[in-house]
Amino acid sequence: MKAGADAGWDDLASAWTADQPSAALNTHLGRRVQRHSLQMRFVTAMEVLTLVALAWFTAWILGGGAGWMRVLSLAAIWIIALFTMGFGLWNRRGSWQPATASLAGYLTLTARRARAKIRVARIVRWLAPVQATAVLLLVLDVAAGARAPVVEAVVACGLLVLAYLVWSVLYERGARAELADLDAIAVLTSELPPDDDLTM
Amino acid sequence: MAVPGFDDVVATMGPPLWRLTSAYARGHPEREDLYQEILVAVWKALPRFRGDASLRTFVFRIGHNRGLTHRARMAARRGRETDVTEDLHDPRPATDDALHEHRRRDRLVAAIGSLSPTLAQPVMLSLEGLSYAEIADVLGITESNVGVRLNRARAALRRLLKQEEIA
Image (tube, rainbow over all chains, first blue to last red; front, side, top):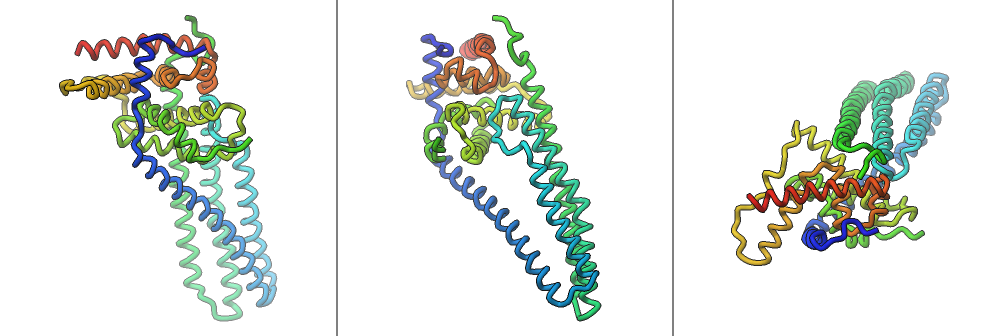
């Protein structure tokens, strides 16, 4: 059945479809898509690079001798890194599908994604200091046998932890705003019963 | 099933998505921003398009979901929703047919934008030529519900446009 077929409606439809986006808008869109594409590639590249750097760092440290402190610190760093990766995969379960379901499905999926973001923010707040401590222990152990930039390492780790903490706070705030949006959507779409309760 | 190219999607679905933004965003810059936001979401979702629904349905669903999120976000930011029907009247004199058509279209867009999303959605999809079944598929409601919403929406739209003519 064609929706709303009558002469007046056809007039409105032709007036409606005359509204077209400008060509310049699609040029901007192309740039925006390209930017998103670059961002996604950058994130993937950074993840791979981090793993490679960690592997190289492990080999370098163990190459200088494998005392129990070094092995313990490295083990802690690897466990945290692998735990983070595992957590990332577990956390994204069920949120892979595109947000194209019905409105109810979309709301559920968006809420799931927002809650996953909140979990990420919280775990980062816990893990960043732990990971930094493990790295510092390693640096101190290396420094005990040779000259090492201990102060610089402490400052770098401190700054990194601080950056992660600030990021996690902002990230959680964004996710909570998304959850608040869902409440507003529920209000916006609540004027009519969800389905089938309507009579002509 | 072959995933359609993004450029093809923009070419075929860009204009309907642009019109769709009128119900969720106010003013040209905001509409432009939402239009791009929707198409970026489409671009991200496209690799997972399985062909369970038609491409048109798939894209419209994304458009309406994103539109609702945008409107909710902006409503929260503005503090409260204001009635945009006050913007319907265009004081410029109609000098020719083209201007008259332009004003008519602007009034229609503004009138649809002033409807609640539950009424504006089926109206827009209907004006795009979708059948009851397709509209029901996009919005995740039954065909009878589509009929009820459309009846109410058309009555509201007629009232709004008549008020505007009187003004």
